[in-house]
Image 1 (spheres, one colour):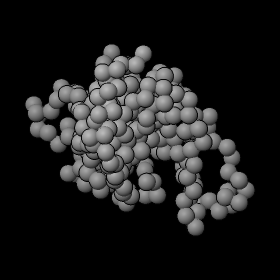
Image 2 (tube, helix red, strand yellow):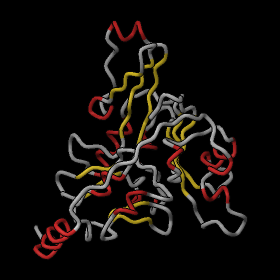
Image 3 (cartoon, one colour):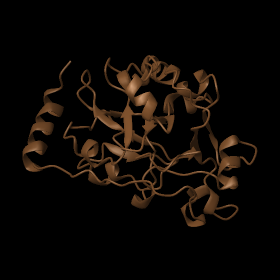
Image 4 (cartoon, one colour):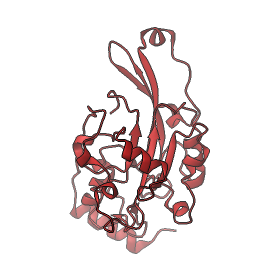
Length: 258
């Protein structure tokens, strides 16, 4: 049911703040992050880190593009049809360039390559994408009413009571991870299944991956898979040159990924 007070505030603020926020862009050109780019918990001294510092790891070499993760996310979070909190992209590298597709967000898997593209292919792989839960999140910076915020435990969330649907956060996200929910008419995105994590459960997408390409855990727990990946130094983040402090770490990420 519409709330006249909230709707009125949205209209007023839209008129007051007219204009758009330009989205940043960048290209990943490295295979290994410098030590200074490690997630915050890995940089802090003993006793200074938060009780828990969550991170998400995606292993490119394990992803088979089955789409189970996308379906699980859609069901768990009641994502409108045709919109996605997480999605999977297929990259096909050729001499002429890189072909990228993501039919229905990869939810139903991927069709076979056409004959011409298959002959040209030098390499191909799948890349799951989701909100990076940035430490210095551009979406938080541009929200005029504080509806997009970073919680004390490191999750970038949207407060439905305050979102005015101005779309500033959507335009500011350099990873294309946000969208305007066509049913709620508010900004939406992956939350790493915050409601599940707070109840000691894994994000839905992690639980259904048949190859364990996705993992989630606490960087302060040395036994966790995410902590072990960070310590190995064999990981990257998307568009690392933007220095947003991505908490989604990719293992085996090729330089062609943008």
